[in-house]
Each structure stands twice: as C-alpha cells, then as structure tokens.
Image (cartoon, rainbow, N blue to C red; front, side, top):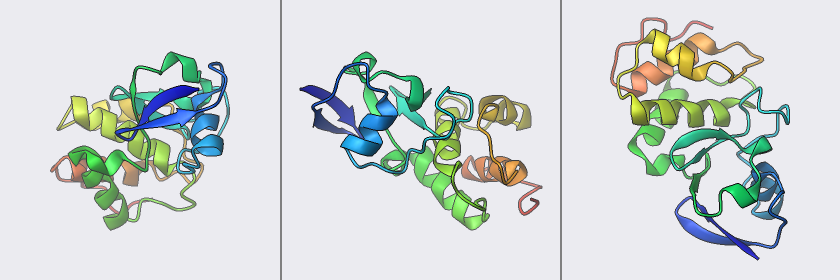
Length: 158
C-alpha cells in the first residue's frame, strides 16, 4: 500500500510503484480531470503539479512522488493563481473542445506561482509543449495575463 499526498490529503493506493501517476489518478482515485493525450510527455494534457512544478503525469511513476505534494486540476483552485486562472478561462471563453485545458491551466498556474506578472515571451516559453488542437493559444495567453492582473489586448481572438 502506497500513500500519496493528493490535493492536500493523504490517499492510499494499492498499486505498483512503476504505475504512471496518470493512471493512479484517473483509474484508482477517480480524478478524471487529468487527461491522457500522448503517453510520452509531449502534449501536456496530463500536467499536474508535483511540489509546485508542472509535471507530466503520464511518464511519472507513482514511486517517484511518494514524498511529494501533488496537485491536480481538481485541487488547483486552492491556490490564488489557480482560482484566478479558472475564472479567467471562463470569462474569456478559452475552451473549445476543452480536452487540453486542465493541462493548460496547471502549466499556467505553475508559471504564475514563480512569475506573477509574465510577459508574452515568458508565457509562450512556459506554455510551449502544451498542445491545443483547437488552437486557442491567443486566448490562453490572454487568460494568463488577465489572471496575473495585466491587460490582455488579444482577449477574444481565436
């Protein structure tokens, strides 16, 4: 039996240490917000926070995060950055299909935690590797700027 700290609570799992964190979250703990995209850490749909760092859950073995604090999209609103991002995402209608958005928000929250007022270059650099098939990248950037209290000139562009 393994114990993980998920969204501020200890959770017991009867899984092997080499199970990817993504499957432990989705299949064992029934936290469905973290999505499977590519399985090779290239798309960002599975992004969670491990000790505050944006981490791809699809390639992270459970055994490597036993002593870490793990935050999923279900728990990100507990942070000021996460709460502000979720509000901005809704206010600016960022989502189209929505599949990648949990990973986008998790990556953005990690960015804002370390860089409270990022410029466009910092946002683009941090978000690189988070793919959106609907191409809402301008709205994602605008939502990040809005959540950080900055003006977002490209607020409603696709």
